[in-house]
Length: 613
Ligand SMILES: Nc1nc2c(ncn2[C@@H]2O[C@H](COP(=O)(O)OP(=O)(O)OP(=O)(O)O)[C@@H](O)[C@H]2O)c(=O)[nH]1
Image 1 (cartoon, helix red, strand yellow):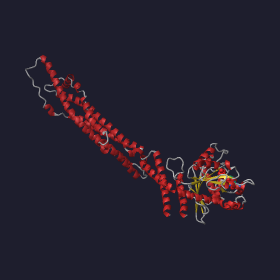
Image 2 (cartoon, rainbow, N blue to C red):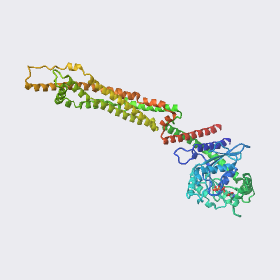
Image 3 (cartoon, helix red, strand yellow):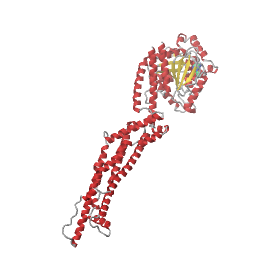
Image 4 (cartoon, rainbow, N blue to C red):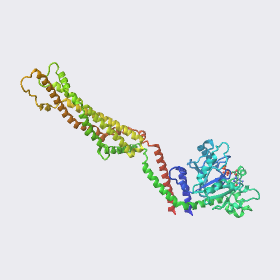
């Protein structure tokens, strides 16, 4: 069926995309498509003939040989059937532009690529090598070659390798979508076959295990494997397939694959033991059976795969929208993003001031409580005590006491008193400054969009705090100027309206001279006191106006103005630095984007096959 053929091609392509996009199952916390796709995994003990089976399925020599553990990384081998007459070639995923027509070079590249990942240490690595072979002589199939199971580490390889290999192989064959090609040499006791032991464990019913018996030609004279091949000795759901690969001697003699396939056919056809099974033996037959089985598995799994894909697309899109859009790369877009983020912060900051979010009310608290309380506490009683009034006035008079009213004395007393207002004025400015600073801090923390960008957060905080500092300076100047203005010109009317002291009675006696002086100074003190009270009332109203004008209003209107100007002068690289994200988050987004890309292309692939039906 043509459409089923294209389904295998589709799955091949999806598997390829999985590898490109870093999905080879395993322990990421991302949804994995790889594990949902069926694949054929070749398992067997060392020297059981795995490589030989793979090569005869492909019909080419291309796998590394040697002693010890040669296969040290999984090899994902995708066979793509091409039209008759086209040239065969291999292509590695890690070398996408290079077509290998010389298969001995394929072998070398597998070796080199293995070493690139594992070093010369002969360690194993679970990261697969991905090889596609395009040929008219293959069936569409994906096979995965794994390191051979072994019981002892060979010289130069660490002890742990025995276990490491088992863990790796297990991680593949455990997956319910894995079709196991279990290779056992016929010249060994099948009861001790590593491949059979493992497959029995992970697939007790034998549903997904294909038993392959190699080295039938090497069995002792007079023995045969009919019991196994006819499914009596070790029954599986799928019939066993016997195989005869090239011997070591054949390989030395350079017997090619075509000749070897022919030899294999002849072996079965002419065998007195296996003649009746000849049509169901051999590597070509094995390849066809596998391909057919794979098709039926894919057909059965397709609805589940499709729904997995759709569900994963939804999940990934949800996560991505949660993570936020990825940062643009060109400077213009970056500047725009930064400005947008600043505006988001600014909006929240304004809400704190204007209401909607708490905090602005505390500024009113400064004007309503703190300032009046500070004004009330000013030490005017001490400053205008009889003693001090007398002292200040007398000093101002000099050798000639004043005659009617002590003009100079008044001035000095008033100046001295007004000086005290500087304290509460500055304190109000500072109090509001700290409140604003706190609101900036809170607004940054509350700006959800900024969370991703710690660097920009810090820059905004620094710029805002620098601006607030400037506003504070300005506000101090203005409020202090208002205090100074009070002493630069006194309200004339106030004094004109004071009740004049009228001398009652005749000339004072010498004893009443003291009394006169005392009540005179008291009078002066109380006049100054009520003048200062009037000024205090004025300042209680005007200091808040100055503070709001210089600090609160400025913060609302132009908190980040300087920052914007600086931004405009920045180069692309500096802008990018501002948008430095939390690296973990960036990484996660990248992974999600890649995985999403994979699922979408998989969905498209499957759609196109289904529509073609
Ligand atoms: N006579 C004969 N020799 C075989 C047969 N299958 C494999 N061999 C030989 O057995 C040896 C091991 O075969 P490989 O295919 O390299 O085995 P392997 O399982 O891939 O080995 P490792 O990758 O090293 O674990 C080679 O010398 C093959 O020529 C067979 O069916 N008949």
